[in-house]
Image: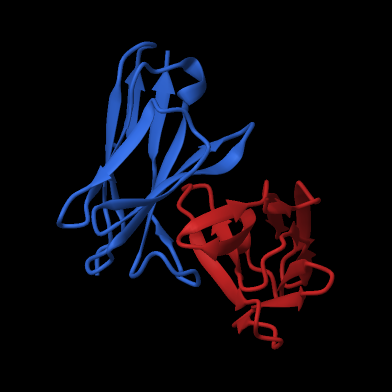
Length: 113
Length: 115
């Protein structure tokens, strides 16, 4: 069975500072993909970043980057230069077959002006 | 290009009734998947359709069903509604299905309240 764990239910960060959200997962699969999705108050899920497990290089998307540690089954999200618009719920997700995603319970991030 | 469109956005139903939710994927996308989001259970996978065929199904009772039409639009149906079915139902589409690695794009969801 695949499980995704986000151990930080809530976090806050000052505007312009850097914050890291944690995610660990458990799987016996070798070929899989990891994602971070953001859900703002509007509730629409928005893709933040995507990582292929077979790639050792950490994915980066503008102010968002990941630290992917395959052996440790860890996939953290770093947000640099935090902006007020980053305030949202962040979900870590795992995918290994079709479009069946396994989501963590989410981390509620608040950016403080 | 238009995103994933879900209708209706909000609805209230009574226990025992049934409900049908609709999802129109992004143009050209052939895969549609459905998720249920509740405060207690989080985001849970319901099922996935690709080319009108159900490819994967989550761990939900048979009261939850779905289908996909030849234009890739999808509907999900919940029969004999229970209070616990109150949730945000999210539809997501992707260009491909079956093989992993696809990015899925979500709609704004349908809020279902069962009273």
